[in-house]
Amino acid sequence: MRLSTRAQYAVRAMVDLSLYSEGRPVSLKEISRREEIPLNYLEQLFFRLKKGQIVTSVRGPGGGYVLARQEDAIKVGEIVVTVEEQLNPVACLDEGDRSCRREAHCVTHFVWQGLGERIRGFLDSITLADLTREARNRPAGEGNIEKGACKPTG
Amino acid sequence: MRLSTRAQYAVRAMVDLSLYSEGRPVSLKEISRREEIPLNYLEQLFFRLKKGQIVTSVRGPGGGYVLARQEDAIKVGEIVVTVEEQLNPVACLDEGDRSCRREAHCVTHFVWQGLGERIRGFLDSITLADLTREARNRPAGEGNIEKGACKPTG
DNA sequence: TCCATACTTGACAATTATAGTAAGGTATGT
DNA sequence: ACATACCTTACTATAATTGTCAAGTATGGA
Image (cartoon, rainbow over all chains, first blue to last red; front, top):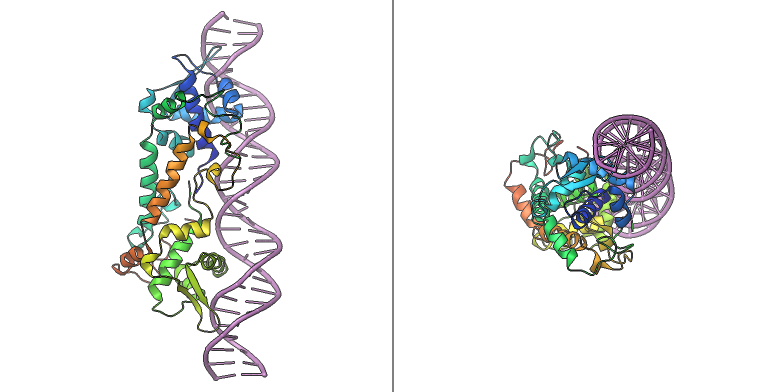
């Protein structure tokens, strides 16, 4: 029951972007340095985040990424779903899955369904604004986390 | 954010055990047949479930497994945790993890912490009794699910 | 006693998913 | 033009998970 590092990185990167952008684009290079996330990996993440219309990009020198919406209109759940595809605890809940033909008979189905709803509900109850507000109230150094703290591979 | 098939199998197997045991031990062979779970795999699961004191075993012919407690005193969350080790969405929440030395600085930490609590809270709010009650109200055939329904490997 | 049943346990192979790397391309401001 | 920085695909290494195999031990009954 682990979240992918993609999702963890994505949320951290979005918080960083939100904190350090003041209207202007923030380059992935900056985010990569502050958050200690490999640049190439970040590029992949932001590729998805852009497709998911959570950020917009500005090309060329001085370019970078900008939030597509206000901080308080971006839910953590959105970010996670965008980079992680599905947020269902079991495969047979995925859209397009046909293996679960008779879900009415499956006693455990409703448990996993309910679990998925709780997970989404919770992550959708937190916005980027909540996280940046939290971050600004802290004596942070570089990046929204300290070096070595909460590294996914830790 | 997927539950392991171990956990899915374990819950189904426990429901099966609960449904078909009437005080007497149920053999893994039976459960294996009804639920279409490989016998050897079931053995591994029940090894853990026994260690977790959720079931007890009776050896020899006519033996098998019995619930260690009443149906309504066994939570789904317990079963899942027992076979799945951890139910934390990120590694740095695991007990004994030292990589997250300065969690006070980590803005996203509380999100994952809260998520873990919701997951555990939900799964602990459902008991085996809830599931068997549900199952008995259904026109089920063999096993608590129909053939091919909700197979983890989908 | 002997045997079949069924639990017990460890080791291991195959498959899959994930994380991370690499490389080349495209757009654009100076 | 040229440097910057986004864009996109492909690939590899590694880890986890799933599932198999095999060899035990305990025990009830014929």
